[in-house]
Image (cartoon, rainbow, N blue to C red; front, side):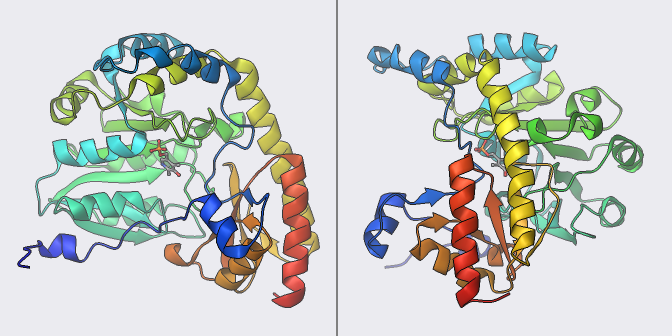
Length: 365
Ligand SMILES: *Cc1c(COP(=O)(O)O)cnc(C)c1O
């Protein structure tokens, strides 16, 4: 076989794959396992979204509305923005790719942090861009060091706020000062996948920056607070002139019909949304106190997950998995001593603590 693969593709490291839950259970000979590994919503999807989807199954032979007309209008009025400022995607992950497709020429540069969401760097590399990576400082985006990394070739800067996997945020003043120093023409992408969970008093809202002097794009998703990760729907919010280019490069039917219907219904389910925030805040406080009580340091987080220093992250992850509790080892993010835990339902949190306690007997901190 003669297969020609460009060097920037041959050197790509795949996103850490997860096996299906059913397959893991079969391998380990367990049942009833719980997954607190992927920052999903433990309450499940909004019941309104489920009902709306069920009511529309008979229309699956039709192509979806390629303009996401109803969703765009509903969301635009919810946010108080022009519908032309919105671009929907097959998860906000797709928007990351569209931004690179639309605004980066191969050989140009993108600045990201380390560790951060693994997808940005992979997408840049897959499209022939050059990653410039800046280490976090005290687990936070080092905005000063990021500015120092800007060159004439820099086209985009990706900042997730809160950052995944640390759960840290930057504030309004810090961000405004940063934006003021970003050179003209560089796009700052503010990934707000977890913005819903941030304490209102310190919450920075990308909406306030979209029409400012610096080019700012916000990314948001229905995968986390809205509990619709399996549907794949997210969006970018930006100046309509920028959105226009993303519409040119995207597939015509990139958001499936059920995703549009589910997201639209979820937006109206305020009860599910506020229950999610309550569950997350209460669960986070309880879990952190319990885990600290086991002698492991936990890190404060403004998202629906947090890091725990367990000493040997990979081994603790494996041992917990064998007991039916799935968390995320952090070696792929450069934190071999840590695991990342997503807040679950009270009974799941309880089981996680019991399981971690038993595991630490075998694999002491
Ligand atoms: C989960 C997550 C997303 C969401 O991606 P979708 O494709 O919308 O599911 C985006 N950014 C970060 C940092 C995340 O952790």
